[in-house]
Image (cartoon, rainbow, N blue to C red; front, side, top):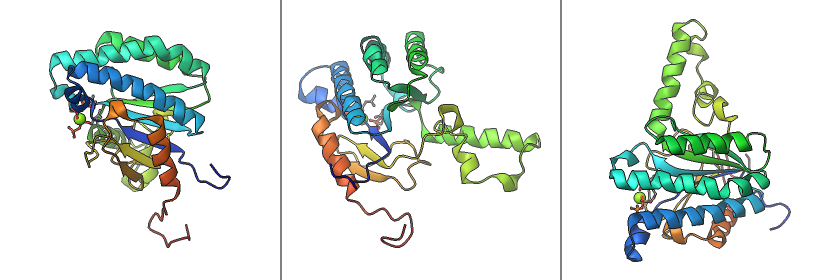
Length: 245
Ligand code: IPE
Ligand code: IPE
Ligand code: MG
């Protein structure tokens, strides 16, 4: 890494392909999710070492409830296991855990308790912010923000003219309630699917996108680093003129 490389501040990942990995390896889907947890662990470490300040992972969407009870329950059990086995190391590494999404709705109690513990244990940490998007859906997030603004207008706290980009941003999950997380500079999706699947729709307005055919459980820290370094060579214009931003 050279001195002048502009590293991303915030990298977000759509961790996709656990099911296809399991199928390929002839194991059940939950074994795929379990393997995905190991991949996630390694990426957190790598992001931290690389000096990335915010890492957000899409772990469970508002649409993922459509899956079988067995799969959904298994995914949350894996999360509980992840917190039990990793919380100490995460905390020792000064990682701060946030959740994006309504994790107290529909989520099994054991998972809610683990999350609350992870948040509490790491709340004063100042290193990498690790955000887990859980029961997360961008449209739900935007609807929630709009309702919140409408309430304020109804109560005379705001006028419609006061509403701007910033007012909307601050009421999203990435807003005030989680310390105003900056928009992702880079969004990576594994497994070859070329879509956002209701992830960070507002926040991704000017995010760079990267897609890889690797399935999430086989995604390595080396590939992560390669994608991030490729990002540093991109020319981000934000609607302005080349070289003039
Ligand atoms: C991503 O892997 C993890 C979650 C959505 C929870 P998938 O389970 O979607 O894997 P594929 O897309 O079926 O391969
Ligand atoms: C997106 O993956 C959600 C997560 C990675 C948690 P999905 O597998 O649910 O997305 P689609 O259904 O392929 O769009
Ligand atoms: Mg998928």
